[in-house]
Amino acid sequence: MKGLYQGSILGLAWLIIRPLVQVLAYVVIVSYVFGVRLGPAAGPVDYALHVLSGLFAWQAVQRSLEEAPSLVRDRIEILKQVIYPIETLPVSAMLSSALGPAMVLAVYVVLATATGQLSWTILLLPLPLALLVLFILGSAWILMVVGAIFKDLREMISVVFGLLVYFSPVLLTKEIVGERLWTLVLLNPLAHIVICFRDVLTGALHPASWIIFAASAGLVFLAGGWLVQRTKLAINELI
Image 1 (cartoon, rainbow, N blue to C red):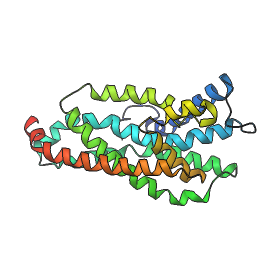
Image 2: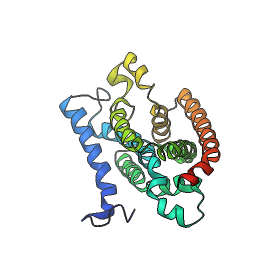
Image 3: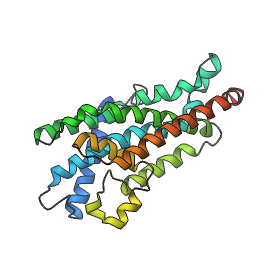
Image 4: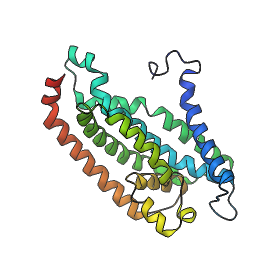
């Protein structure tokens, strides 16, 4: 993290500024420009809480998976000099990128507490976090292997995430887009992750999303672990 922001004036403060600016932009565009509300009595603060509750999980996935394709190539000098277990590369990357989403969560807790909307179910947060770790590790292993060969994968993932966020539960609700479009929003592969985290933060419950999230996290983790073990020797030779 220090190397990432080395030489910048604000340094690690960007980890806080960036998500706050994103949330402010979303609230202004959706609430004021388009005049959309979560409900008849809902205001901009309610929509800000809605965005924050979804942006936390979204950024955790986005930051880790955007970096995953270049994990091997960016650390090739270290990997050449020492015997390094490449399957642990996504772990260090995930930990170093967790501070930004953690700041988003902190802002949500402060704002929800101030407005009296903080639910006791936030105590259940470790449950979706455990599933998220499995999903990120499995996905990062897959992208790390593929990214060692295809150098454009990182940029492709960055573009995809930048587009998908506008068609996700981070910004949208069923009331905003309607039943038909909401069905399409749920086809977003990260939609159910956002919904599960929002369930814990707001006290709601969507059983179907939990089943899909748990199943996808387990399958992706197993698939990624299998792939990285099968290709470890090939990657070491490539290095």
